[in-house]
Length: 216
Ligand code: HEM
Ligand code: HEM
View 1 (tube, rainbow, N blue to C red):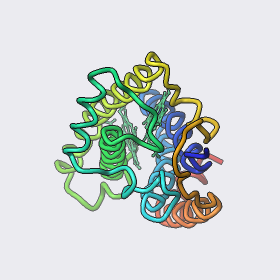
View 2 (view 1 turned 180 degrees about the vertical axis):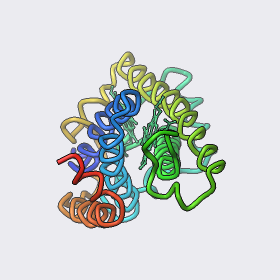
View 3 (view 1 turned 45 degrees about the horizontal axis):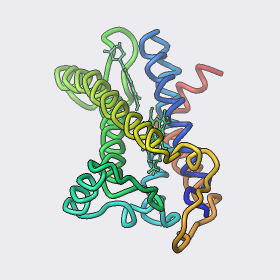
């Protein structure tokens, strides 16, 4: 059955490529690229969050955010080695996904207020004091390490399932998995891409046009 729509899949793998590039561009001081790629990720994440409210069943928060009790129960079953492939995110994985969305949002928001003490500053840095911008820049640096820790856990969990004979990666690539039960309702990804276009145009209009015109 189909479990991941194409928007969720393209979102996921673009996010992996973008995070790697964001790290590289910041390390190399390629700040115009850093900003441009970050705006792209911002539009993708914004769309993913809206898709979490109105998108396909498996993309919805209401589908994968369960009570903490359910997540703990699930983990204790997992501990006994009885892993199974859920239709969408499992109850514990749902919390990991929420954590990743939160850390990504924090990284993007603090970036808007950051400065590199030389030439570049996020488009909102001039609205706050120099000290406050310095503080948020520090959070921007430290949160990236926390994000890396979470990503490490996330990848370790995916490989743990693989060792137990459950391939979660293939469905994230193809969209489908061999499962039994009621098929989740899928929405056409074209709606997600329309939302993405609107968000990207808004970001372009307010913040990105200057830096993009500098690059091209
Ligand atoms: C930059 C690194 C990564 C980040 C930030 C990340 C983040 C995420 C997020 C937010 C989701 C939830 C998807 C959604 O509902 O929209 C997810 C799911 C998933 N990711 Fe990643 N991911 C990363 C790297 C990877 C890598 C390298 C792999 C493969 C080895 C992977 C495999 C998966 C799989 C299989 C799922 C679906 C899990 C399930 O079946 O519930 N991810 N990831
Ligand atoms: C998820 C998105 C983002 C990631 C992963 C990310 C990652 C990073 C990293 C790792 C650094 C530190 C590089 C170093 O060690 O010197 C950095 C610096 C910086 N980032 Fe981001 N960033 C993101 C979003 C943004 C956004 C949206 C903006 C502004 C529009 C931004 C503006 C900056 C600035 C101005 C610095 C320089 C800070 C300094 O040199 O101390 N970033 N970013």
